[in-house]
Length: 323
Image (cartoon, rainbow, N blue to C red; front, side, top):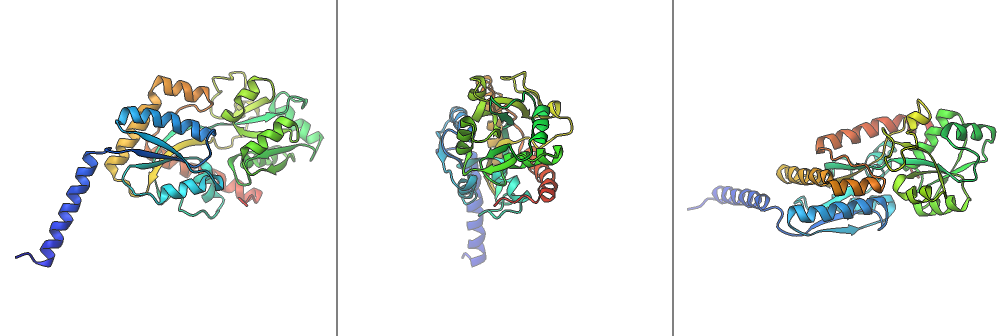
């Protein structure tokens, strides 16, 4: 006769066996890749590129689900609330994970505890650009012009507390200048006013302005990265353009929800690393302004910690908020 304890033990064993079987058969159905920003953004370009490659290598459809809104937090919340079974993963950027912690900004999820880091797919370097009629051709000249014309220049970003905002304020403090911040409700508004001449300076991700720089509609003074961007080899890095000015480099990564089974997390990380090593994927992402990385989950978690530790003192010193 089965006692209640015996029945419980059998049920527990069956549950564990079922979970092990499900992991052995993973994946067996469509995987959803949440992109927490609208179509057309750099996150969307990366998401669709990676989804296509994963579909081929994993043998199941990988569909992109754009869930834009609230600077990426709406889509990230959906990912955090998803079942930890490997069938929902999502694209992430500093604005959705490391910056809310550094800014002590309230978001509807815990940026660290509610996710499983899988891989940094690519760097997402910011560029410092100016309008073509501004009489500066490098970052030092911009600083000198701003000193001689205090308060007359303005820069636009996709919002307060974004990486673009932090870089702009960091340059102000580092160089003792005052280029006025104009926050927009998204990057498109800032870019439109920059192209129209309403603002003179922009701190923007490279993919957003690459075509405009190549067309001569904007001048790129520096790229914020450890190395020069291969598509624009004459543009210096921030360290080359202004020694000592060293803001954090932005990134694009992929997370799963918390409590993802280790075997499934390892499989996804391996597939993501394999995807970015593909020559065609690497070529396409690099041409779009996103140099590939392909980290481990542990390296991704360490990068987030470094971001938080690096940005927090800058945010406190500048009394910057995400509001």
